[in-house]
Image (cartoon, rainbow, N blue to C red):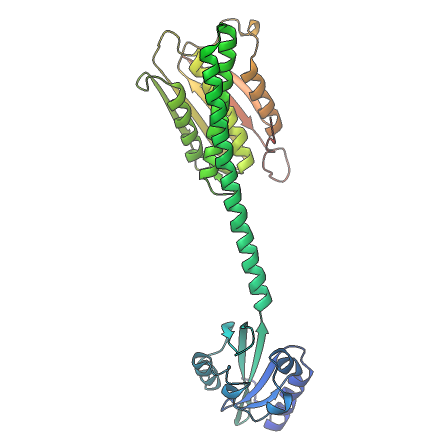
Length: 351
């Protein structure tokens, strides 16, 4: 059975008691949208004299600032049970006073043959201002960070240019080799900075990120793109910006190493960069079809590139494996999350 409506006198007294005891802005309206009662909070918040409220038409409150046609229509529809005012937002515009951003809710109360509306008004002005300030700060931070990425990338390119000029001038072949190596590494970091500047803050899509990185490496190091193909095969994985930098540095070192050693005497070949994920586990690989590893790899000393890759893998919590690709060589960096809650691999800070 549907609940019976309260007797008019009992219902009205109950509604009046609720309004009188409320600490939030409340209005009790009749069927014609005349104010029966207003809470002290309503009068105080909207600077209306309490003795001017009872019997006043809702649209005439204050200096008429509540006479908003859409709101009046919704209140009339609510009184007729055709609609209900739920989280209705409006700006209260008053002459000589600051505008207020309000959220209104209204409910119909049935008292036997009579109808009352109870209207709750929440002032969200400060919250709206705080939200705008927060959004503006985030936008400013994003702009500044993007500008920082661009400036760092530009500075690194200048440094790389100076290194290359120095390499051309020195007489010592050993010094020239070191300067060229330094130039290549500075260019790789500059390329990483460019990719971060082009990407949005937060998670980074690895496939386009690694593709753009390898395109940059190929443009600066592969003289004949028809002889050596550099490709990326990655799934639709996301990672943090910090982790993407570490992965990018690893890819740069391994690709540079393959370009230096896998294809002597202008040998043709292919280098493939792969990235696959399975839940929280991931595997990064760089595979070439070049001349392969030395027959006695234990006799070869690892260079700076090897040390960099090892340090990056260690701080990511990953393991390194090197295997014959028949032909060529495959280097894999694999991360497996430990038993327990899934977590992201730790990102490297600075090298």
